[in-house]
Length: 117
Image (cartoon, rainbow, N blue to C red; front, side):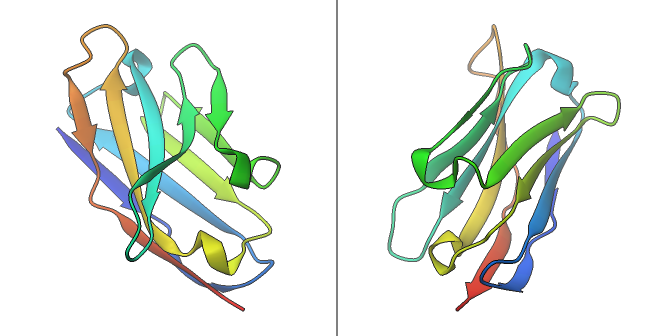
């Protein structure tokens, strides 16, 4: 099983990025997919969740700016990040967790997002 996160980069405040998390070896259809982030010196925090039932949830600091979406046919989950702020700077990780067998949990390798002021 492999999750490949991509799409990070350097952007100015107010800009946008779209992260992608592509899975191989599993079908995202049976998984909830989460995006986490970890800034230097801080704990990893959950940013957004997309359930396999089509629901999405966001941490308060990104509501209205970030959108998580999934393309089960492509086995890919996206995180569209708009109106980026310097405090969004972090390494972003995707995680997939089976909706029933919850110890089937996988992490991607992380992608760096840097927002300059």
